[in-house]
Image 1 (cartoon, rainbow, N blue to C red):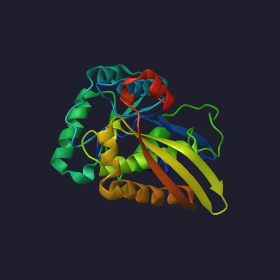
Image 2 (cartoon, rainbow, N blue to C red; image 1 turned 45 degrees about the vertical axis):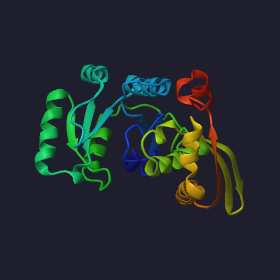
Image 3 (cartoon, helix red, strand yellow; image 1 turned 120 degrees about the vertical axis):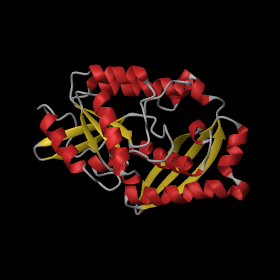
Image 4 (cartoon, helix red, strand yellow; image 1 turned 90 degrees about the vertical axis):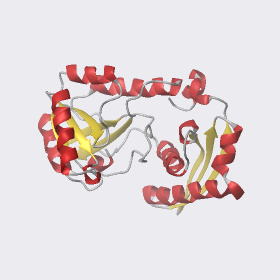
Length: 270
């Protein structure tokens, strides 16, 4: 979605389940508006959080005019049978995008193309590299040919339906996914407590929420080194995104088993 919209709205890491929310990316041109809905990856629910993530997926499938089904050259099959069967039954057009072909060879790519053509006989299959924008133009042309005419849903100046605090929290969460291992990224939530714009400077104070005291120690790191690294890299990305200097303060707090509680998930915006 970041390549299609032209802005980094969705955070990226090599770990599965990095995206937790449904994020809209809005592309406005003189004669059209396209609203992309980037969803979490399809998962078999192990936590209340996963159940919420799958609700975003199902809602997006229900209201899509065109479905872009994202896979890659490393994914041999879809791990969620019910969702695959639902996509197979869809009446709207489906484009199957096999991403990361720059990390594979031609034999493997063709094997994946044949596999998905068999699994989704009504879909058009494209081998793409989002990183290098390979075949993205062809996908664009197909989307423009398929979308129905309607009035614009959003103001022409908007690029998303999410507030700025959401994107700030996601930037911090991305750095946690990049630098922390095992269960730590999945146990972490970020809350922006203060977002204050001043001339030439934006002041931000954020709380990194974890589930256990031991996780708090890992996020902080020896001598505070991990927290400093996360903060430093997040601040640099924020300055690019906001186009201004940023003063960032991060704190780490424990909210026991927040992923399992409906009330806590609602509190954190799920």
